[in-house]
Picture (cartoon, rainbow over the protein chains, first blue to last red):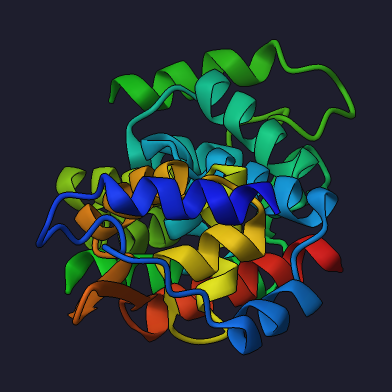
Length: 132
Length: 132
């Protein structure tokens, strides 16, 4: 298998003491088989990477963090973050398309919430990790 | 306040029926004050966005998902994912620097685990969201 011989070649050239690679090949077939058995399909891996990419923006994480405190209308988000409503609307559209937020219209106003508990948890866990 | 008058101007031009903006200004001061009281500092928002940006890559999410199943050496990850060890090493270095994974050396081999439960949860929650 090409990637296994490639692995071995890479290892020989690995710097002694480096944490980047093993200094000798050491494939644990039981572990590799276990991982292969539940390997992410391309579509799932791409979907996951897309969601995280979308979250990788300062304004969008601030919007999602604000919404993790409760429902807000577009004007509320704009006022709280000090960012123009048109910029907020643009970001909300992206977040809505990715199903990270949900909108409901009430009269002439539009209220937003996080789409589900997963999004709440992503922001909370990410933040705990950063603040640690 | 500039962003509030900006908000109002934007609203007037909002398309009727659109979910992107309120059709008339409707700032809820109690909600806005609540959000402002716990607004993410710039450093926290940037740190969070950086972590998510780093996660926004197909190979990196596949590595993290594989590690969410248990400890693996660099060769194991390379073999399981069918990606060269040098490419895996490069990604692991980035993930290690961001404290998303931890390495331990045992003899001539280097084993990786997820850095903490937050990283495990980020991958699990993100995946549940994508697969729903």
